[in-house]
Image 1 (cartoon, rainbow, N blue to C red):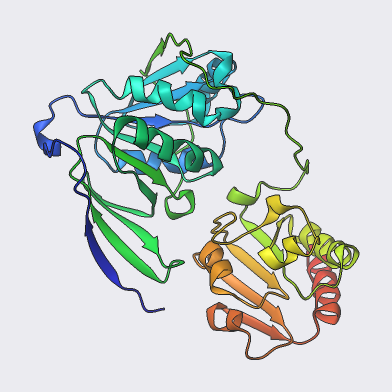
Image 2 (image 1 turned 60 degrees about the vertical axis):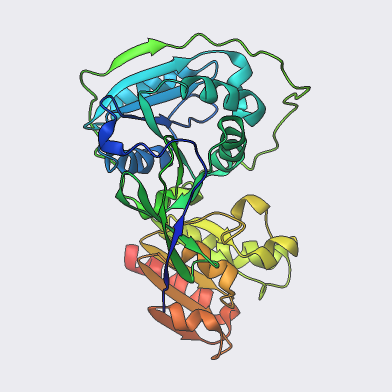
Length: 347
């Protein structure tokens, strides 16, 4: 694929103090946890990106179960450069409501120690970062896929068809990190990191209330961190046929199930499975696209996968141009045969 490197200078910000002139430069990293307080897999990739900024890292946990997340980090992650863990236990920070979390971050970033703030380019990060940028009057750099230095970053534009090199001279660099573009930090045990509690009381609260969440529960690997993903497209006629063919194939590979936007819009599956520019960005070791045409918006969400296998009856489908292996034919015949052969090979 042809890639264009573009340079963009971000000029907003009163100070252009260089990174090297900050004696106590640190990176503040917001670490996401699940409903039980355990680390989200993407935070391991986030910490690797934070390490590349060559600052001491301060990890921040928020919410009533923040202490559980901090302990999980200490017990399961070995991250050189992580010097401190901050815990804000206020229940108003549960569910990462941006109206509540952003003021806390803005207060912390008043400290001149912090030159960088990083968060995963997840739904949480996408909600929080613009509001934080408005509060401190700084322009965020979103969806970073490569760090060239403390002030220079690469991010995709035009649905990933071009790469922009961003020079950011602001005193505070606000970054969201595409997890799939960075490896996970080493697992192990964190030693020597100081743990401190951050007092926080929400002031001038907006009339925002968390009501409920209707989440799809599954025993499958989490889509954003799965090593193998099988994805269905609009070629499936209805939800029943989608599940009839996709579920056995996914079970044979212990894979997560994904979908294109067209499949989601047609009611074939839940929108939490959507992969693409407006869905999840994934980079599994193996990606099997079943009945997926290969629209540019979908390719933006999966083209960094290790091995891509396409199954489609249209020989001119764009997905074949991006696939390592292609099976041309009727998916309703190919998928059951493929599933059977995989199960036979495992026996």
